Length: 117
Image (tube, rainbow, N blue to C red; front, top):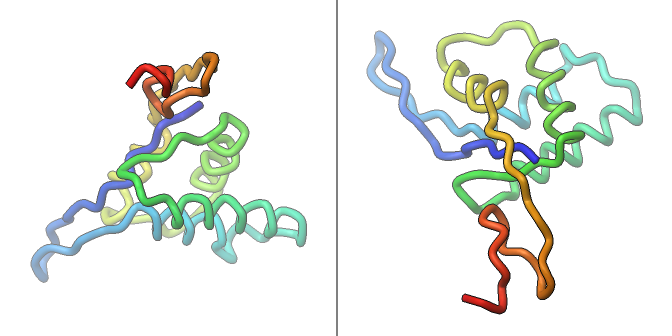
């Protein structure tokens, strides 16, 4: 699995500073017309965009297959700029996280047994 940070961040430009939302940036990249999706690809990308934008945490764990879709979308998109650098870095350099299932379930990123909290 890959862990991607979704915390907002500020970018300074000539007009001051602008707060960037990585959730929105990911969704915009996944659903951009520049991707030239066919119908099934559009549905796949839309489902992933919704998963990311609906995430309430400061980071999201994506299955390697979902991360691959996002990574490919990033590599295919044109027109990125300074506002996107931090989000693109978070995606392309996403930390690999090993999640192991234990009896009683797992606790997200830590893999701790839920019953031992």
